[in-house]
Image (cartoon, rainbow, N blue to C red; front, side, top):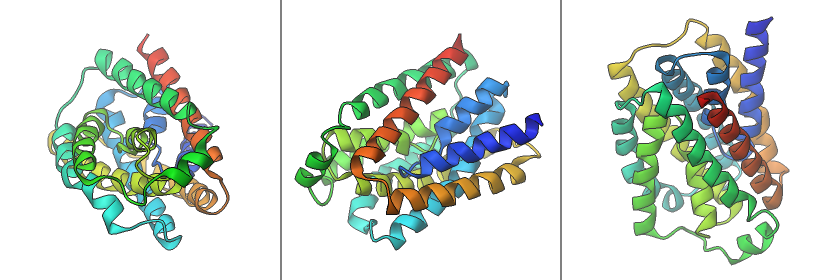
Length: 248
């Protein structure tokens, strides 16, 4: 029963996160942390789940016409290699949980402040993000994502939206691609130094695939900008609370 509930929790995490262009990495990390998994298992497992769910999200956003090469590649140029580097670095458990929790808390507060004005902000946002700032932000968040074991889109989307570099759905699409590239790179980096994947991983992958398919369909077709930002803010704050609580 416990195994079934855990798999269901992963599917629910994938559903809600994929609706806003995320892969669910922070949610998987929080759930596994509460269950009692050690960081050596949490990090590569979360990255493996991220790769699958973010790939589903990329497909959905591409089919919906929300992905272009120009909006995505500036973030990935430095994001992927720095994520690979971060994947080879490992924080001790006493540092890992509170650091991730505080980062998520800050991102959640920034996102919550923009919910009411989402439609107006989207109308004023440029078509594509500025090139040089996108490079620098992509590299910084790529490093953080590799170290923490999450795809990085959960940090990237709030920054892009707070800086008003693009509109909400495009930010979600950028996050999906960023998550895919960085999760794959960080997983390679983590696997090279810490090959620890649980035997139940194939079952968990199937569960998050279902959640990712449903969530990304809702996000691309039905959720409005304000709702997308609200869901993202709630996810950020909930994950932050879980991570900080787990640290103590």
